[in-house]
Image (cartoon, rainbow, N blue to C red; front, side, top):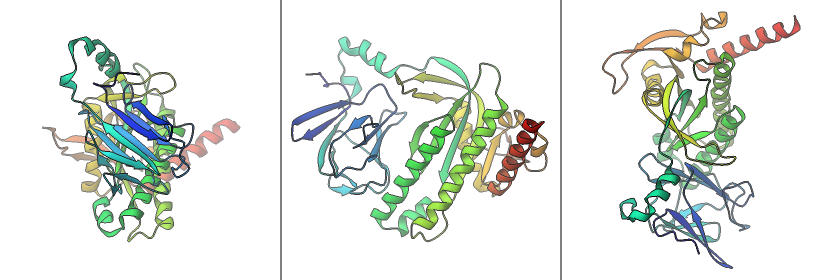
Length: 333
């Protein structure tokens, strides 16, 4: 039997006995009945895509229910929003009992250090990328007014559909953070393809449309909305996955600024804030001149004001429609 003494893992209790699922080599793991999940549990009471475990930058773990039919319970309490797990927590997916175990890393013996370094894959490469951070607006107010079960269905559905939209746009969800998601698009070593930036804009536009549609599917007290920050630049990345799971995580100023830009949208009264470097890659498009206004913002943690380009979703959709029309006319000629 595999020695998991020093490895974070799930202990799954089934009718056939115990199963051990190591939580290494990735930044998140999907759990459900469907065979396309990382951790497949053959329980008819478990949804096809039931939940996600997200590794945080500090080594902690978030558990996110994906709007499952029968819910997810931690220590006998139903999960309605992403929760932080502690070693020894008892989880129930459907009718299956699971224990989360996460021993302290500093208890790893000297002989295990080489294995630990291989599993964690230290950050080692500088890459040019675009980072998108999207946040659900007024989530705290929403959480206070909705029943826990309804809130769980809603946020789980939002996470699941957000993941599908981002994957279809050539990226993946690098982080699920409470009521937000972060995605990364990698570019060439020294240049950015303009079409990639348009693809990112289309992704955030689709996320907005999906969020608005959820407002009509659930009895929410107000229309659901999102805000986003998009930033382009270099950051340090490391591969924490393998095989067909290209799980990169990134750290650095480019990532931090994307989060700060998303926060700045509330101050500016806009939906999307775009970093100055991102803007340089599509500013030559004639459609951008009358839609993207320039602002100077004070971002938290930065000593000097930063330039950003803000836009509403209505303006963004107009921009995307005009770009699509221009491309169509080029093909016809």
